[in-house]
Length: 433
Image 1 (cartoon, rainbow, N blue to C red):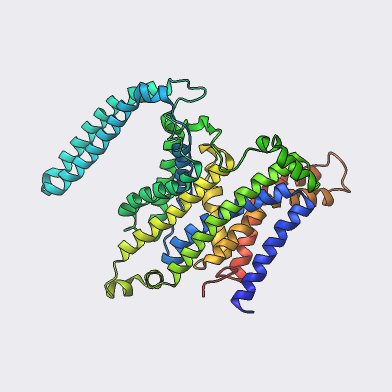
Image 2 (cartoon, rainbow, N blue to C red; image 1 turned 180 degrees about the vertical axis):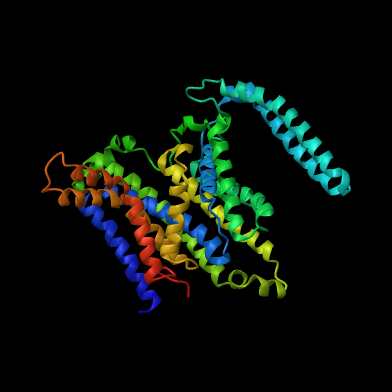
């Protein structure tokens, strides 16, 4: 079977699974799976760029996804005028002071001789830390005291939410550049530990700095790029159109909104997929794969391996940031407590491995397939356990145990799928050519 035919069949199977969900369950459920599948495919594409193209083992995916969500708040939410008046100037002064302190420490390290510079750098950093906190803490207290139940943060720029998607990519790329400059010289296993630790730091900052995005109090009511359902239901023209199709206005409005999100997400995925394919087939893409396969030979040919790794690390992280902004837009709220490694790191890696690392279409396929299974395994497992235990007496310990085990079916299923794919198709369902 040719690669194209195999890919077409596999994508057809995924399409049938989503259509079957609409027929058996509801079209709302099918469109919700489709939309999150599109977002997951974008995330998988970003990770595949790093691992499939360059062999970079990044397990800090959730940090870059969270930065995309943060960008949505900073761009689209309206500014809180009272908070800006209360302490914004002092806050930015503190941030500038902190940046100046770090810059001075770097300058001292570069200019002075080895015997003395360590002590002077330590002195500069310690003094700068206390000076920073002296200015920063009062400013934060003033900002967070402004109506803490509803705001307690600076807000955003009040711009259209769609602009947050590229901004999320730029923000994630900037942080990835800082990480890459310090961590990409590490061996692959140490790089994985470093990226995981830095991602946890990013999540901790978003959770604890209430002035930035309300922390764990969450930011709700994010602007939407599509109409609200209630507005559609109050539109006589829309209600009439829904009636002509034989659908009630409530159901039609939810389907319309989800379909709107789906079309926008599909456009983003298509653009990124085309760009990734062009990059893969370009001389730059061939060079990246040569570096991945044999770094020593690439260095001997005069290639800047660390510089190229930094490029691909920034690009892949930017794509994850775009996906994070899209997901937060779809949710309509920023909830830092949901950024868990299981969902945003392990699951995305399973998508890439199952789909086929090094193949952009394989990453997209894995994104759709694994997300569908992640959502549907629990209801399917519930139905299976109900059928299996139908003949058991009520109150039986075995019956209760089997039914209570349904909530763990997701992890079991992901593990079984990963083992099966690695056993029978080690390079993924759509392997790299």
